[in-house]
Amino acid sequence: MAEVSREPVGEIAGQRVDRCTLANRHGLRVELLTYGATTRAVWAPDRDGELANVALGFADLDGYLQEPSPFFGCIAGRYANRIAKGVFTLDGETYQLATNDGPNHLHGGVRGFDKRIWDADEVHGDEAAGVRFSRVSPDGEEGYPGTLSADVTYRLDDDNRLRIDYRAETDKPTIVNLTNHTYWNLAGEGTRTIEDHVLRFAASRYTPVDDSLTPTGELAPVAGTPFDFTAPTPIGARIRDDHPQLLIGRGYDHTMVLDRATNDSSLMEAAILTDPGSGRTLTIWTTEPGIQFYSGGYLDGTRIGSGGHAYRQGDGVALETQHFPDSPNRPQFPPVALRPGEVYRSTTVFGLSVVS
Image (tube, rainbow, N blue to C red):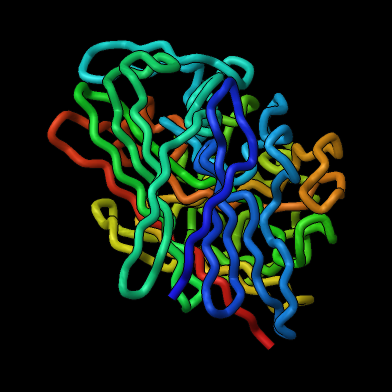
């Protein structure tokens, strides 16, 4: 069974930050930080058993304090992704959130969940071991209504599956949309781009965006477009096509709408990513309705990663399981409201394996 260890890595404003490491009997190792409940590194074997870190991140804590943040590996919230102009209305009341992405609210605001130190406790079970991160977000934090009690539990098992369970409760009506923002490079961070990674989504629609990267409200078919990954396709195969949505996103920065019934929140296989060179494969199961597909178009070489390499455009791909951006303002999208007495729950599983 997987084991858990913990050690301090620094302080922020007098508060200690720890690194929690999950390791299983196959050598798979996941490093987590209490700052942002962040996935700092994922060490995974290739087809020859050689380990490499397949998650983008920084060598030390100072890297995670840089602005603007690339959100490497963090838990984004209270609301992951964008809310147009930072404004939404719930139960007849309008709320103004912090704006930190041009005119929009992004990933929880100026000091979202990614920039908070979480409490951490070990969890152990018959088949997996992990860490439960928890924090209380006070009423009014970044403009959100309600005191929100949230926890995120990472568990690693001996089948090389990393499971993330999200849970939250509130004392006032509010909105919630949490995700893990890991950037993956299955060849090993800093080695080469992800454009030859082969990707398949169980998604026949996606959300087109406007010039500020917020959804237009349309759920457009992927058929006949560069967004069609219903069959395994290299990420770079069409990334430079003359398509207006690719120009807006500097590649892919769009939500893929998973093929599930409206009220279905069962755990489904949503995506498979494979690096042909190493054989490493990432399979993603989720209860969420969508996956934000971000091909790293805004990485510009100004961030030096944990292995000492500058991260440039296309050096990692984020596959963020979540509700759709701007859902509070789009009644046609799945709802994201949470009210007193209700429990927000979400689960995503990342399974790592190899192909010959």
